[in-house]
Amino acid sequence: MISQQSLSQQIALLERMLGAKLFDRDTRGTSLTAVGVLFLPEARAVLERADEAIDVVARAVRGEVGSLRLAFLATTTNYLLPPVVRAVRQRLPGIRLTTEETTIAPLVEGVLKGRYDVAFTRPPLVAGLETRTLISEPVCAVLPEEHPLAGRSELTLGELAGERWVLTPRSSWEPWHQAFDHSFRTAGFTPDVVQRDTSVQGLLGLVAAGVGITRLARSASSLRRTGVVFVPLTGEFVPTEMVWLSGDTSPALRGLLDVVTELAASTDLTESG
Image 1 (cartoon, rainbow, N blue to C red):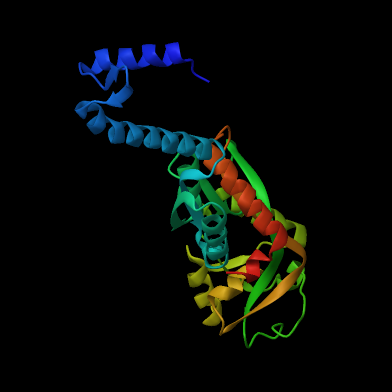
Image 2 (spheres, rainbow, N blue to C red):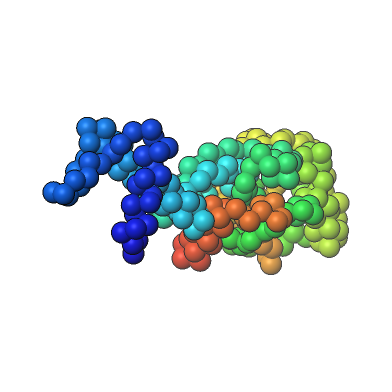
């Protein structure tokens, strides 16, 4: 509550700042001058804008407004981008999203250098990033439809030792290929790699053409419906992770992380795209 004396002092100060009289005061009371009549709606508008600014700041602190740049590994875009963007738009309509599909090396570099706020990808990655697992799904052998093993419900990696393989180039992401090497060594063989392709779509095309076989996450089956068969590999699973720069405490980022984590807990993201 502002006292009458304090209010009068503030009005007098405002009149001195403006160099104009806002009120006429006489024995009958106080009324606005012509200048005061003009000033009143402007003052009200300023107060309204101040209230709006305070509300924007409060929403920003709660992570309800802002902008975020999302990167999706090419193999996750098809099934993950639609539900993630849909959920964030519904739950956090004040967050402006931009999305980009990319390959693993520029994705990791982009997060580390601040070009992307959040990325959706697969491990292993590198130091300096925080991760949260959203999905774990089977790894499958991808075979041509006419392959003798195409009718199996499950295969071990060792059963594929004599096959010709098509894989991504080692230069695409060395940490992945080190993990692949370990899997093949554990299965007791070194794969006969007859061709390499940088994209999952390219690998699937090579398998459909009978050039060789490959191994991919089951969700990659959404990228090609004919010419290939996905057979789960016994005991092999791969996670999809949400990745961001260590130490990033942006409220908008935290809001998105919470929304996507809740989405992953309640939805099969590999089936919801």
